[in-house]
Image (cartoon, rainbow, N blue to C red):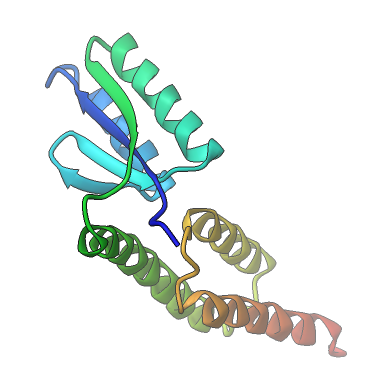
Length: 157
C-alpha cells in the first residue's frame, strides 16, 4: 500500500501586526498540523484538510502575507513514519491530558465539567488522523466521569 499524500501549507506573514500570525498559529494547532520547518506545515491530505489549508492560505494573503498549498508524498517510508509519529505524539499528549482532566472531574460532579470533557474529546478526535492508541482510554475516562455524575444525580438526597 502506498504512503498517503500530505497537504502542505507554506506561508510567510509580516511580523507586525501580530494578530494574523497568532490567528493562523491557533488555527493550525486546532487542525493538528505538523510543523516541518518555520513556515511549512503538513497534514494528511483529505478533502477537509485540503480545504482548511486553502482557506488558511487565503487568510494569510489577505493579511499581507504569502502562502502556497501543495499535495505531496514523503520521499521515503522513514519520512512518512516520522510525520505520522509527530502527529500521533502530539495527539497522544492531548489524550493523556484529557484522561487526567477526566479523572479529576470524576470528583467534581459538575455537568458543565462533563460537557467540557466531551467537547474536548470530540475536538481531539477530529484531529486524530491515525487512531492514536490513547483514544479509547480517553473515551472511557470521559464516560466514567459522566457515569459518576449520573450516579450522584440519581441518588436520593
